[in-house]
Image (cartoon, rainbow, N blue to C red; front, side, top):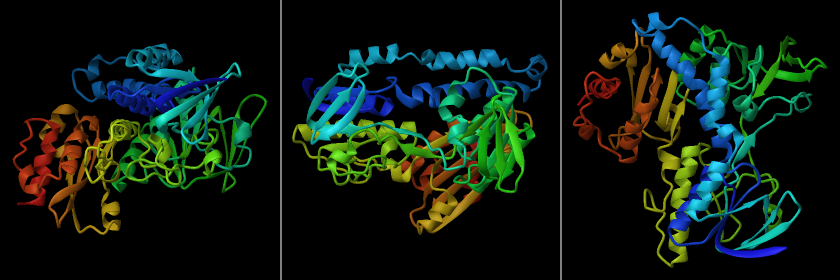
Length: 473
């Protein structure tokens, strides 16, 4: 058994773990990182990058067909094989040599294997060749192990070997018939992708489509999916699943209806990857989400154990995990040097955005881009708000962007402070517009000051002016 000591030990080499390690090394600390799968994590190989690569071809074709002149030049359908090949390239063909090379260049030591906490500041690494390496951290151990797809307790489901987000993102062929259980982001995006690639898609959305977003977002995406040929079943739920010897999946719904498919995708939520990391050795429950304080320290584990990214359940989004990681890496360095660490709202070592300004884009058709609170969430939080809606298709830039452009914008204003606390856009290609709203919310820019932020003409961003005009001065 080898024994090594570092200033910081990070369990999990996805984008969150990589960013913690990088910031700590830049601050002068020595760092070891432990990874049991591919360096780069879920986002690089089974989530953000490959899934958006699947969706981009569809979006580009849609955009071309919505503008006279380019529409006439489009004479064929999507080439599914070419789309999958492009997807493979974005996933680096599931080879992590490039990411490993980056760790080397950053000065981070990689240990491959299952990391397991065995005591205070001690992590044991169990490698594939059955060797065990003990890593001791002088200052901090960081858990950045992410999350995996939740498989619900539906009779026969596990035995039927359904797809999760991983299989959907890495499939080598397009199934003829695909059933999707779920109505959230992954379910909606993969229904969008696979119907465009030629699959006959049925979507069982028990709680509706994008039910956590503003209602108009789910309504517009549902309508678009149905127009594209997806059989969206709101309120539908499977009670049993089987896969026969020929590979066909058979689902029985609560009303007794039978549905057959070539593949079944389950996308109803996530569970933390904490089952095998030794939480029991420090009095915590294996398989549980790690609750953290404002400094991302794990509750009940002393001042040496931190958790960043999905595993702390604050905001299950890669960009928010990386945000946490950058802040945490810098904070660990400051503490190691004996410097004060201020975690007050929007301070240098705070992760305030997790609570007030989380941006998200759903790459469906139309896209849904949002940041901050929905109108319902703001009301639930006890804020006195005013909600301003505007037809995005009535903006000059939208008309130029695409023929028949349809969309909607919503601004949620805290009337007591006269600042925006929530913003949602639904429409073609709205993803790149949301950062302006993020800045307005984080900066708590007063409505009166926003009148002086003049949008260029003719752009879709002119919606800001129209929203302010509707609000009034």
